[in-house]
Length: 239
Image (cartoon, rainbow, N blue to C red; front, side, top):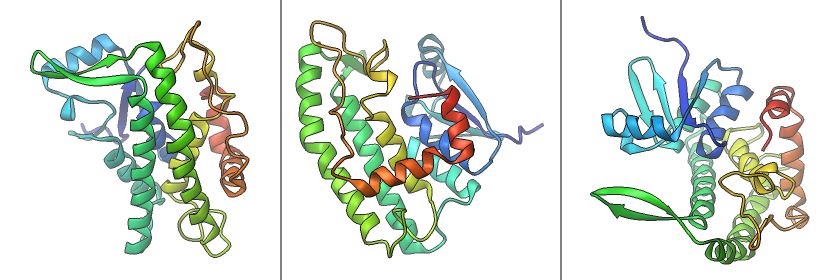
């Protein structure tokens, strides 16, 4: 019998690239199963060939496995009614979500280097000093460039508090996710996690008041964080 609920699988140590589809499903009241995968399980899944492109997250829909975080999030958005029907607005929302993916990829790139070993692409952790150097550049250059553009998009959206069109779309949830990830109060920066850098080089946090120059982004973050379903999720699954 086909499972009617999509099954989302991701690592058991964080939110990462799976959080956007989670937020979309939750906001849109779409039932789904959220299953975590240990690194040991991931290794077995990769060896067995059951992972699309050897990566997580994956989304199992019936007998089909979907890979790639943006494809998964787009599917979730269409199921949740959060993907624009207008083709131009849809393309703009895709653009924002691609930028979300860029910001995450560049953030992860501060921590890991991708190398080929034994005919397989693997992630090698960078030295702590290199992580700090790259993170400082990330927050000084990459983040402001993206945040400025997001702020401009809201400002030119005919008085709407959202990025695309008059109502919330998956693009807004993507921006909410990266804003929450880069919040200096998020526990992922201060407790052992992928992002945590121990002494003597850390702990390193994002700059304080990162959103101060971007009042419209700050307002968007507040709107979404106060949505009852999202607030309930974050109560037990904080960043």
